[in-house]
Length: 116
Length: 111
Image (cartoon, rainbow over all chains, first blue to last red; front, side, top):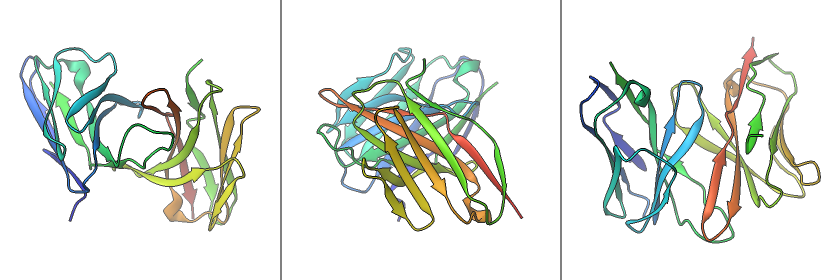
């Protein structure tokens, strides 16, 4: 069974549309993340949720709205898509967020978003 | 200066060669360090943690130099399957963990 899954794997859409990406983890982890990896392969954190609570919002435009219905799911909704939103979006989870020791992050397979 | 910097490469090495990558970090208060591996069009996966005393896992050795603020990854006896992008990860604690990924170093092992 896949530990962290994302749907869809590929998403091609027109500028101005609204789209959602779903993420689910079956690891029993408390913390989930959204990352954006651009064409230069830079992996940048967007959001982090801990037990359904938003912890990190890294200066992401408010067109991006994460939603966590429960701690196993973290979805990403994007309004008014722009060309610059084209990237691979990775969901990840870790056992917990806070504390002195880092917890390994497990990544989903990624969603390749292309905005035309 | 970027928080975490890596030489993007690519490093093209023949099979059997030894290759080393460095990663520098700017914040001296950084606490934990890791190497992730990302295959082409795949997700990143943890390769190994980096400890102050250095650590080894088979052909892979990771080192931390706090004085000079860099970590390194050494791969001995390179295999074709080692071809990937290697991402350096640095964490900083301050209420919650701040995790920063480097841009990665691409390795291509040539037959």
